[in-house]
Image (cartoon, rainbow, N blue to C red; front, side):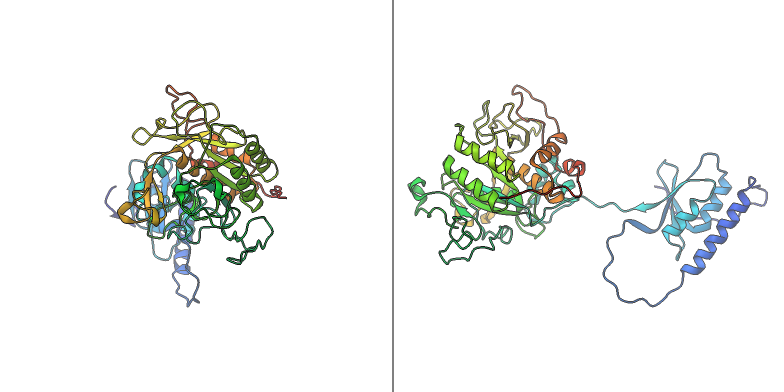
Length: 477
């Protein structure tokens, strides 16, 4: 960029203005002078609320003159309102630094009336995409950049009214990055041993446990009673998923999440070994949607197609309009597990780390896969009590690194939560269409269908989504 040069106010007497130029420039000069005289007046002002961030640099104007405009005319017009100018590269654009008291909007309006001006516009201010200050975000930035999470956060960060049910091993609601991010059931009284809201689950203040004591592995210690609100995470898996979806963000600690403004609903259907049954998963799903979950994450799967679970998925979709997302499976083979294999569920595969456009070796593939997300070396929240066994926590803090389609899926579930936050009337089919139509296509390699429509691009999905006013809401029975 050239150095800033002072402008000369003189015009050579030997030059001649084209016909019409003199009158126009004289009128413009008088208007500029009037604007200068009337705007440079200081009046006492009452105290006001802080102003929003500026959208343009006040006191600057970007101007380009039409080809053929005489140089003397350009100098004269520039001098009318500017103290100095700099060139913007080889674009033929001048960055004018306006006289004190002459507002950018007034100067722009005047310059646009001059016959030799091609355009005059403010010097707009752009802002960096959302860059959270969480301590571990530098370890997350590479995969959040791939899925365009920062661009999505500039549009939507999630609404507290949007609940994402996590059917998993439970959630550590006391985790410092999850405190206040877990749903609370206002219809229940904590610790009174009564099913206050009559939904079949006792003391389900933050969620419900559907794992019957007889189903729990003996190594899990004292079994928790089923159909109670005891949803503490004894495996860490559900807490890791919760952190990806809705961990507190920009709080100067821990990790950043995809849908920081949304809330999570713990629904315990897996024991400390990660095992559970189709019946418990079906009951947990129906509980979640009846209690208001708009999005459901399944980071588990099984080889068998359970008619019971299939029916629960169908009801959750048809009667409650729930968006359901599931991991494709970690066996590294063709054919996804269930519930990812059900048509109402968004099946998510995992991309690799060193070659992010390729399939992670463990990720299942097949025509049922809808899209992919990063699934290697993700960082998220874990219960502090499980640090060291089985989780290798970072510097003794309750955060760890893990891989799997289990952790690719919640990125897509959180993206769905952002879409629903932005447009509550979106149906599951519309959410899926928005995600698939904007995904980044990936090479199939030797495993066709492993990435479905491609890697999720959250920013484009949010920018491209069709938002409708007055659309009917979701009916709940």
